Amino acid sequence: MSTALLWAQSESINEERFVSIGGIEQWITIKGDDKSNPIILFLHGGPGSTLSQFDNNMYAGWEKDFVLVNWDQRGAGKTFGRSAPSDINEEYYVENPLKVEQMTKDGVELTRYILDYLDSQKLILVGTSWGSILGMKMILDSPEIFDAYLGHAQVVNFSRNIDYAYNKVHELAIESEDLISLDVLDSLGEPPYDDARSYGQLLRIVKKYERDRSIPAPDAWWEIAAQYDNDKDRKARNDGDDYSFINFVGHAKLGIESMVSAIDFDKDGLVIEVPVYLIQGEQDILTSKELTKPYFDKIQAPKKEYFLVPDAAHGHNQSIVDKQLAVINQILSQK
Image 1 (tube, rainbow, N blue to C red):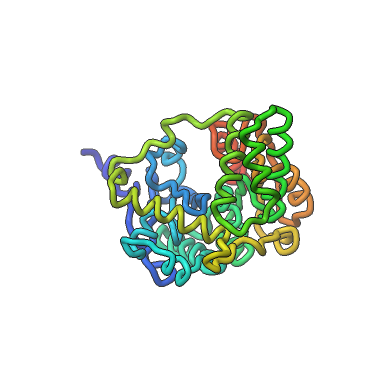
Image 2 (spheres, rainbow, N blue to C red; image 1 turned 30 degrees about the vertical axis):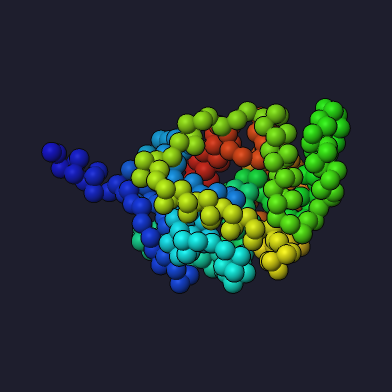
């Protein structure tokens, strides 16, 4: 084997493991062909919708130019499975609230760990949906450790986002004479709701109309990697998804307050000390352009750009990923 090949092998990184963050063990994956390449930390949505379990078809080929870091956040995926009891009951929900403040501390601590571990100064932060709340909180807290922030499906104000979503799908259901959706929406009434299940019903209708108006992601993106395709990890993902969602929207019967009810970046997220790039699906109903663009226009940052992607909705598709790559390459070319 040649010396050059041995050197190349020694510089690559492919790790999946728990690290101690915020007083608990949290799951991360770090993958790249050259560990000296620029680092991208992805913040998944949900809050329980982890990305680490998928075969890397969504960002296939990115390992060549970047070090990709995925993190199962507190309350999600393997991180949740590591610390939660096997049987999750109402008492567990009540006694273990999930808080944005703690998760922000986790994210900053994890970022510092990654930078130290890879001997780097800064990284690029990419947050999607719920991850865009966490991402904004992290860059507002510790801007000095980030090269830039990419917010995809950026949440501005949860209450106004969900109000807009309800009214938009109600309008669309009337236009399309969708009596089944109208019946559900009329029975729910306008948010806010006391029951997490009501938010779930609304979001299912939102997703239906977003699917109808956008190009979906390839099915291959959601193929579970072999090492995560087992009952234990599947249970951790499912339980974590339920736990995270009920904390996300709140549930009055259990006395659980929404962890995001006070989020309003129109008030406390306007002055940002790192470059900000917002990537917005034009057909996104849940975090719509009607809220993200006015917010973006008010942001003060060293650099900012807003990208509207025509055939995309709230989630990822090929156009969103292509735009993310183009923006990241643009950031790096300007360093």
